[in-house]
Each structure stands twice: as C-alpha cells, then as structure tokens.
Image 1: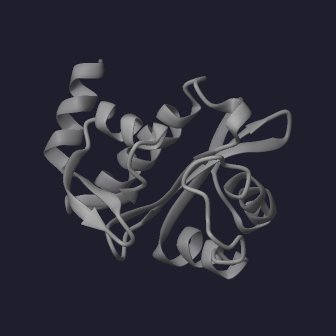
Image 2: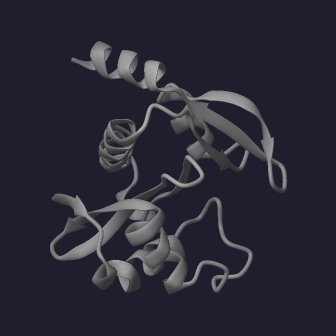
Length: 150
C-alpha cells in the first residue's frame, strides 16, 4: 500500500473511486468533472491517493481556498482497513501546516462517514446543502488529537 500526493494522471482512477461508493452518492456522476479535480488538487488545495497494486483505491482532497474537505472516499471493498484514517491524517496534517483556519466538511446523516468524522474528533456545527451535517475541525482540536495518538 502506498499513500502519495495525487496528480493529474490520477484523475481517471479518482473518478472511478468517487463513483464506486455506496453512500454519499452523487445524484449525477457528471457533477464532479475532471476539471473540478484538477482545480482542487492543483490550484485550490492538494489531494492524496492510496494505491494498492498500482490501483487507486481511495483518495482525499482538501480545499485551502474555502477551508473545506472536498473529498475523502474509498472503494467499498477497501473500507475498514485503516486507509481512510491514513488519508484523513495526512490531509489534515498538511492543511494545518498551511493555515490555522478551521476546516469544515459536509456529509450525509446516518452514514459510515458521519460515524467516522465523529470518531475522528470533528464537531457538528449545523447543516449544509441538502440536509448534510456540517462538521468542523480546529487547529487546536487536531493538534490535541494527534498528540493523544502518540
């Protein structure tokens, strides 16, 4: 297993992962374009991928412009193996090295993602979009969590 920074050549496989999920499904697979991915990993922030046997099985992307977790997704068959935790940690470590601004995300209620973010120390602060739960993470909360993990 390799976790590395995402690049433009990864977008085709990132899209496959994004469209393979069974929760937080896009209402239209064409809503997230290849150009969106390029913008988020090359201009607005940064992304990471997890590769197993030269296949991308998960990815995460953070947006510095809007202080937002834009994506954290795994192929369903690779869930519950710690990959999401690793992608989450590398993404937040990088984000908080760039800024101390709080970061937020939205996710569908009653999903594994909601449970994951709660367990990972995110604080629910309201709703976002079409009924998503809005969570945030502060620099201090993340630093405290990382200190307690070591």
